[in-house]
Every structure is written in structure tokens, then in C-alpha cells.
Amino acid sequence: MEPSSYSVLIIEDEYPARMLMMDYVMNCSELKLAGIAESGDKALNLLGEKHFDLVFMDINLPAVNGMDILRKEHIGSTFFIITTAYSEHAVEAFDLDATDYLLKPFSFERFRKSVDKALRFLQETKHNKQPSQGKLTNLKIQSDSAVFLLALDDIQFISANNKSCVIHTSQKDYETSKLLKEIEEKLPSDQFIRIHKGFLVNLNYVASLRYDKGGSYTIQLRNEDETTLPVGRSFAQNLKEALKL
Image (cartoon, rainbow, N blue to C red):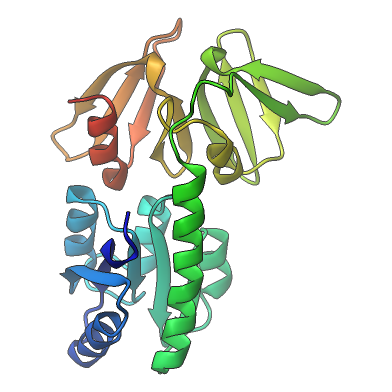
């Protein structure tokens, strides 16, 4: 991906603030404005339809507020920067992995600093998510009492559990203090994919992808329990492409 192709979504309901954000984005040569949403429900629709590298989002939005969007939609490959006049949501936003928190009014210099931070993360993600060359076959994890070397082919899926993760294999489950994002960065992207802010799945175990009338997706795994997992809207397109659907 060339630096000029980093796609941006602006989620802002106030016209003056929206125009200012558009101007700021267009003055950054690495960014390409790819979408604008004036309400939370429109933002969710856009996030479900296409992938954005970087999202600038206000919190007080019509229909669905920004924090609810962040809880539902935030993912490793999309970076969210909160733009708001209210400071009280900062702690929760960072807990939900927001890249930065800009308090209005902010200057272009402050905006540019935030963009630079996001670009560093985007470039690191690109580097870490290169397809594997067949060298990595095991994942080393440490629990409270032991170190385990797990064969990647035995890992069915990985779920977030507050500040830790549970690695589900065909034999048993293993809990580790590592965050889901940390584990994701170690795994080969041609075998493991994020399907939800709380789940990574081994593509080799995906038996079916189902679309519900309400607009949500689920997958069923090819395992003894026929496990069903939710698919976040902003993950659906990447999953379809990975499954060649």
C-alpha cells in the first residue's frame, strides 16, 4: 500500500467541524478522503460496506453515538481517532484501543501529530501482517504456571477476555495475559483473521458464513462443538475475500 492510499472516514454531524476536518485531511498528502458520515447509523453502514484505514469520529452523533460505534466496530486494521469537545470519555476510548483523542478546538499541528501517530501504527500493521512463508508453525504462550508451544493448525479460534485471551484448540483452552492485538501480530495473516473486536479465527476451521436478516453475520466452525461466532460489520468484507466468497 502506497502512503497516499490510506483511506479516511470522517464521522461528524456539525457542518463547520466537518468542513474543517475535510480541509485538514486534504492537506495531508498521505491521506485520501473516502467517506463522510453525518450520523452514527450512516457511519455503521459505511463501516459495514468498505474498509477504512483511519477514522476521525465525533462522540455526540445522531442515532448512534461514537462510543457505541467504537465498542462495536473497532479493529486492528482500522484506527480510530476521537474528535470531541468532551474529555470525560478519554479513558474508555483508549481502553477500546482508540489511537488518539483530540479535544476541540484543535489546530492543524495537533491534528498532524495525531495523523503521524496513526500512520506509524498503519505501517507497523502492514509490516507485521505480511503473508507467512511457512516458517511459523507454532505459537508460544505463557500462563501462570507454564509455557506452551501450540501448533497453529490446532488453534481453532482466539477470544478476548477482558485484559487477557483464551486460545481455543482441538484439545483444550489456554488462557494467556497477552492482548488479542498482540497475538494477532504474531500470527500469519493468510491463516488467521480478525472477525470481530473480540475474536480471531483460523480460516481452516470456518465451515460456513451466514447472513442474518438484521444485517449481521455469523460463522460456524468445523469443530466438535460446531462453534458459532459473531462477525463484526467492518470485518465482513475482509472475511469474504479471505474465504473467496
